[in-house]
Length: 224
Image 1 (cartoon, one colour):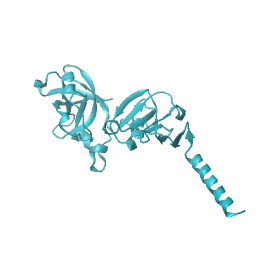
Image 2 (image 1 turned 90 degrees about the vertical axis):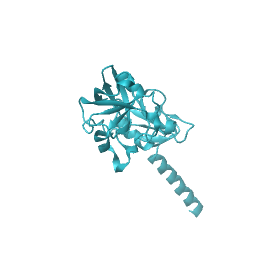
Image 3 (image 1 turned 120 degrees about the vertical axis):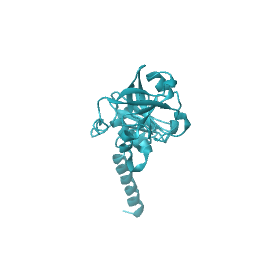
Image 4 (image 1 turned 180 degrees about the horizontal axis):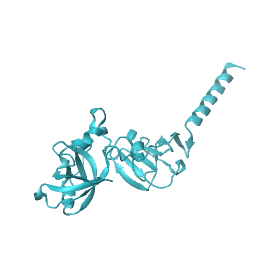
């Protein structure tokens, strides 16, 4: 056997090995349960602005999430999705930086005990979130329903001192106040809030408490 023939067979073996390790489904190259350049259209459950590396774990921690997609929209958005799905349902995307994935059988279930459960009581205030970046590292508008959580409950979930990667970023709580109730997303921390306290966006405050002139009110809230 000449050297050219041996070299050719070696290349063929390497290609076969690569395909077996990273199978191609519908033209998409999968790395176990995730792939680049793909999307799962529809079936949106919720979304959160986090890095692509965090998207799969956030899906695993979200009730009802079975698959996900991530793109660069709004600085990086994880789109959590629900319903029965397989890799065959994924579509190739023109955006090669897009990520899609499905939950494996060994995915960690949603953890409630780590963040507490039940009903929390605290003071509710408001702030202008549009003034700058939040602790979670993104910008938001005042009309969005979001919340800054007191640091006593927020900071313990910050890894290596970087709040951008706080595990609570993007989680939702339901706040009940004198005017009504609203579901808001955790995007920030509130150093001046006591334990149980929440600092709402102006839109959320008006829905839960009422006119901004009220300033502060007692509320209850729970994790969604």
